[in-house]
Length: 134
Image (cartoon, rainbow, N blue to C red; front, side):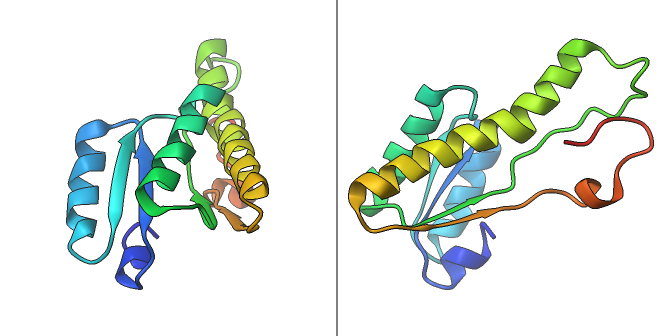
């Protein structure tokens, strides 16, 4: 999606925790369309508000929100560290919820509406024999 949207004329703001990889992708996408990057993970409401603000500042608004965030640390449940489990839940559930909340608030305040697309891995349908999939 990060490549397909700018190629079809959509301006995008990419967010992610790995700054170098994010900037490399944003640089690549600038050649096909308008793309910005913000090196930030959705760890707090402040983080997600800043992600939305970056998109609005860069493009003049926010009409479409797409997320495919997720994390997994495969381990048998009886051996899995509770801290690792919490990281998975924070990335797969809490971070997605926080970003949707921030984007939705902006869309409501702007009065233009918008669309959301949330994508998960196939593990939601297929599961994983050695671990938990949110």
